[in-house]
Image 1: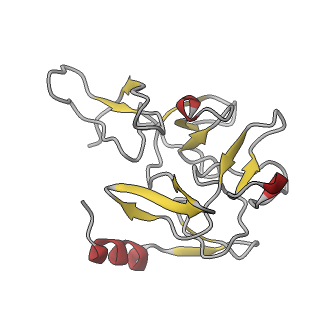
Image 2 (image 1 turned 45 degrees about the horizontal axis):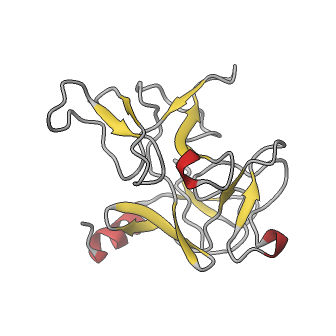
Length: 180
């Protein structure tokens, strides 16, 4: 479990980059914003086109569409910090996972800088959410370990694996490459 001091150190060590919409993010696009205006979701996916996160359609949480098929994701309305060993942020009256500082997929391939590991959401059902990133300009992608999961050889296992789903209730896991 992370202490308050660890959270403070995490925030102080992070190298901030100022973006056009006055949002602060780390170089690895871990969402660290103090404003309600952002173009990145809690899962670190870019909002579609020039849209921003916001309280759209009378919802009590901040969100944005992530593509033109009307897929969407929650957005942070406050700092992304560790809560119970996971990165989370407020989103209106709720708390959302806000990604991790992971910049590679489960095979160890580096994610594209503008498409870091994030949450893909294809409908309102949380079970359908998983972490992924694009790994090349041809649109190839792969899963990423969820922030609440580590790629390792777990008890009674012979291969390294991690959970890739955003929900801890959904036990969707994938074989992964151990980090060196």
